[in-house]
Length: 262
Image 1 (cartoon, rainbow, N blue to C red):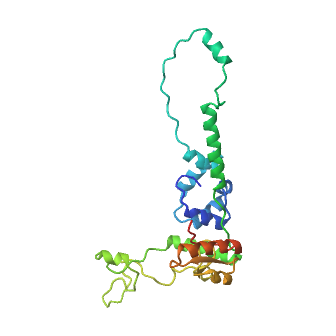
Image 2: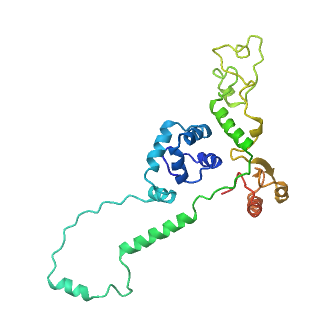
Image 3: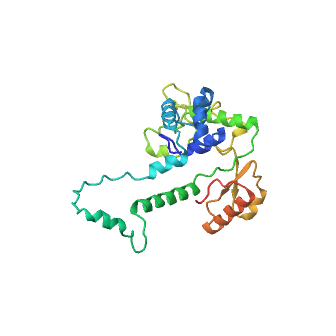
């Protein structure tokens, strides 16, 4: 969607809520309850972003029209040229002449035909709706709760991260010092990993789309995947030739590949 302050990562999260097109998004923005749901599910979407989306969607343009408008170049201003005086017999003679030996069309019609061809190609290569899992109400509620917990969870940093830059690029570790102020939970120190920051168990280890990820190395691994609740993730050690074969086989079995090559 070509909207102001819109990111590609929002598409999957909106699909999980049930919003698949700009029309459905415009209808959802009219309802206050749906707006609250969008706030909870999409991290980083605030009231200003919602206002921008409302202004963009009031125009009533479709997704294809929005993409065309962004891709069309701005017309250049033609320089005014003085007209030449022609004799009276000139127009009458020109009216009788044929358009040309080959019967070529004027430039304006050619440009219009090219634009129509571009529009048809863009519509064919448009966004395709991705496969979605069949989830229970409890799992959907757990995914929403997990998104809300992720939004308010603080960033856990290592002890003395402000003194040593190398500690900002490593995994978090529990502080273990007798005199450690972070371990003793002093108020002027950052919070540490503890009970209460975790998400619901029903949504744990699930992809944002709701699928359970299954690592795949070859075609046989696809046979043990349940396409209703599980999705494939091709291992990074798999070459491009075998990866394309796995993606073709997955399309036949209607299995979603989370890290497609294209």
